[in-house]
Image 1 (cartoon, rainbow, N blue to C red):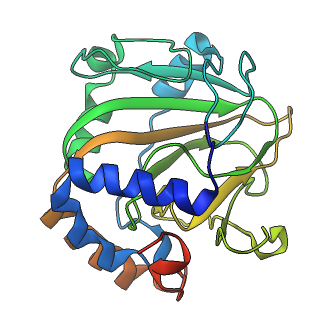
Image 2: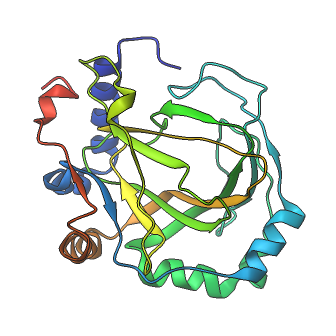
Length: 251
């Protein structure tokens, strides 16, 4: 839960995370890119989509956090996979389905092949059940694009997921948001949680599934190689924030 002003909170969390993962400090050179489509082949699996909708359940907020001060509410259905069966603390209830690792090993292998991870500690499949207000996640505050997402499935005729650059020293400007582009050859992307907020509209007529990869061990050289390839290919769809990091944290 946020009990201090945003900038102080971001400063504290970034310091804690750099102390834990000092090797990630070099990645702050990529901080200005607050949204980048990834040069990764489309990840699609109709059998996984069917399995998800047969097995997903509502997930409930257990603890307050920066994104939302309310608990015991649900705005998502989910399936959660912890590949290495490690005990994890979470502020959401979990719908654990370890059989994913057997039934959809091909999908897991794709994630390890295409994404710059040494290890994936959790795979979360989510589908929203209401509109989601614009927010930051209570996850990574090191200044680099580290919030990895895959739009596995989406029936909506128009994109519903949006992102906006958000300076904690300025009033939030909803008019600056943009909808994440739909591209023919990738459905994977990454954004910078420190510099942006994201949110989504919702229509009960249409289903979608988002894969969230927020717990991982990063391979720094592979990450940088992927970013170079992705920005080169998708420069027209990558968004840059030219503000210095001092706008987001106290130096």
